[in-house]
Image (cartoon, rainbow over all chains, first blue to last red; front, side, top):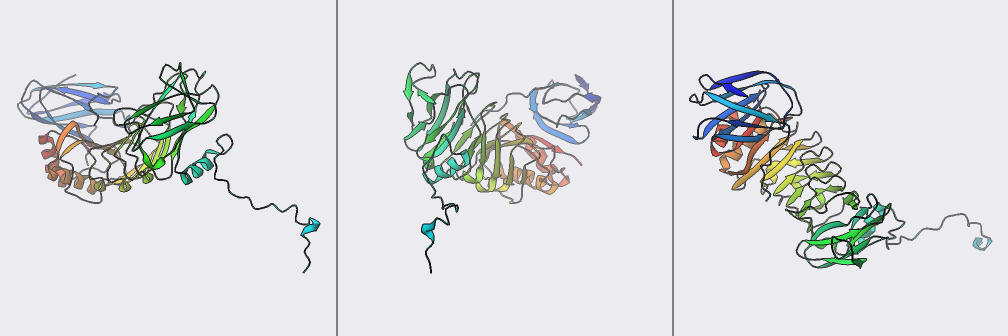
Length: 92
Length: 314
């Protein structure tokens, strides 16, 4: 889904089905800090350059939306949720 | 005093039984066999047939020195995974990861008997599971590690659906790598305080295990993932600056992690200068205490270095 931001902030209000991962993309190649707060209680902070994939299982809770805070220059964010985790880990 | 023994007056009193340390693999219970194995410096891996027993299990083990492995009952070793040429009832494992090819007839069970328990170093390795489960392939049936295996470094049973272990890591003081992600049947217990060399501990989706201990004491660990598990009681009591130079994943969800512990851990990890690698993930959400303002700048700093930080908010 696309979330429009105003002064680097935006939100989505509505049910989110349980997910185990999500992907975020923005239209800038500059490393940009971003925080997404799910259900008003679990925050996920990261540095994004174009896009990022994050594994985040939240105990199968049904979430009532999320909010985004990032750089004021960012005007829109694309975020998609997935039922499975991304394979991100390289074995040692 | 009369000696009445010859009258047989005591014939119904049971005689004291003498303990026979020789294992009777066909009749002794597994717990008794383990006791006898411990006395003999042996280690048992119980195997059980699956389906029609036609499949060959490839069991991967490693040892500090070459040691013999015997198979009991009607189990047989084979020369390859094809299972066409029988090798008999004795094989060896060496100092590199060694494969044992095993068949167990349908409906039967047996044991692998390793001759030098104190030299066993790998149940699998960091890249390979100890066994690959599949249709008609025998599986490891609740192999118990309940006496010390002092040179065991690796246990890997990632995503195995049939094979299982029960293990207290208090018996594996030199363990460096444990991975039983998505292995739903195994039960691991013990304290990470007793495994100072641990580098990776991962048991995502395993709900049965119940580890305890202080994350502040596993100073070499770069990957700790427990995720949703209400049985674990990890803490962060021993504050430290000696974190590894690189850090991969710390994903813990325990009610025992208080807000203060979460704050302190984030502050200490940031101050250590550890560089994020691979998944670059610090997830202290779920059942953990919420962060406070005390760790706000540490979180911002960790994010600027490339970590993804997931925490509960007040």
